[in-house]
Image (tube, rainbow, N blue to C red; front, top):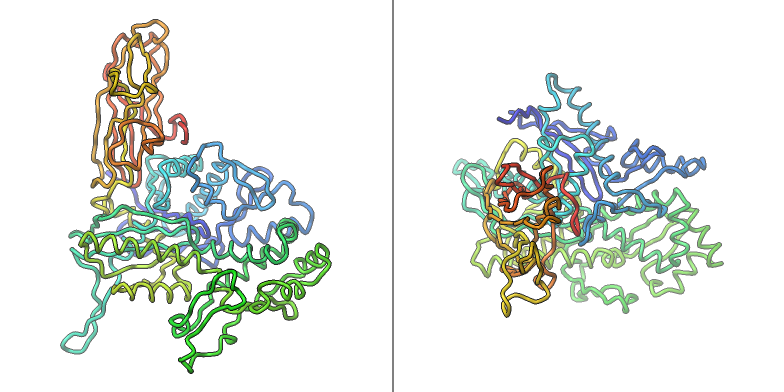
Length: 610
């Protein structure tokens, strides 16, 4: 029986962090303000000289600036945008992450210490609002992107355990699934009753929809069907893209680097505390940016090599507003202007006038004035990627005769005025409806908390890959590849044979189990005390034959079984289990002679990846 009295959900985003509390039996979330003001704060981490987190968010920035100004920050490390390091195709436990000055620290350390800091804050919040709650009564939920690999999920689990969260009290949930549960009770239509009163209409069983969680670092998309009993069925596997709001910031820094040179920019970023002020101001202007719908409907986007042409508007519409009303002004810090003067022996104003941007950028007093077209370009690559992803999935569903008439959009980046208008234009052209539920930036956080007390709310999921165990079988000449021929215990075998357990796209239900029996022999003396390694693989193919790169296979985990003190008997039967969880698989190898299980958990040995 679940002993949880309260759920603590942690939304560990690329750009923002936050946590919330949900007591058992309550529908009211306890708002938790890490910095005393905001429910979500920037994911900026400051490690002190003892490698502990003392500050998060803007307070971390301010403390770091103070340390730099006092000349006492050499042993402190500031990290921002570091979560994207877990998007790597190859991930190991010794992964290092660079701070803002290029010095590296252990990724497990950074994630673990950050979770520890949030855990401590959450425990204080619990003590402040309720009594009688012990550690075994708290369920911890941590959100993860849909596009993460199995190795990244395992990495986050290990980081949370290192922070002091017990494995049996920890649950990882996919960000779009959490947001989908949050949206389940949101109004999607308003109808008028006979008495002329209005009635909100929510999703009903049988209705299908797409949900896009457009966050700071990633865009995750899921496609669900509503089932009876407040449950959901995944009708297409969750997918994602490494595109989000942070990409706009990166485009802005690339623009400045193109103008002033990478050396001057890096000097400013590494040596001046005003760097954080500049990026903070750009973040604000990015969120506020918008142009009227009539302009967007008449925009012809330029090519980069024709930048001076800016943007072409439909000349037949005489009532279009003057675009000068939408210029964006950003203060350029004194330190940056001084570095430019020192490095290039010229002024920023002269640099702009000599560049390809002279018709859409200008410098006035201490401000960089950008024409709207510049901001359009900064947004364009990211938005096109997101819209293409949405368009492709919608058309795929249409091809499969799935009736999709609603697309929910949540996440911090979805609250941008410009993003909303562009997405509406695209989705309306598909003949469906875009819905931006209130508090979209908190949808993942609150939905994750709801999942803590709504077990198995996703009744069915779709496998994103084909999964199986690596095994060996008697070698057959002319059938098996010669390159995989091995000799074990005096017998010739074919190694790296893929034993399929789950097919790509297969419907999965929580608790679903599969197993196969593997036989091994240890008659030779030198084998008696050797460990036995069982590996699990995944492949993009539906029916891979071998665990090799040509079959698009990669090892996602392995279990090491140690021999008894007396050595292995001559024949051992191992039962390999693959069990479906919420966002993860549980893998066990059971020695049938001893009935002892070796689970693939945080104690599992690392394989080629985790």
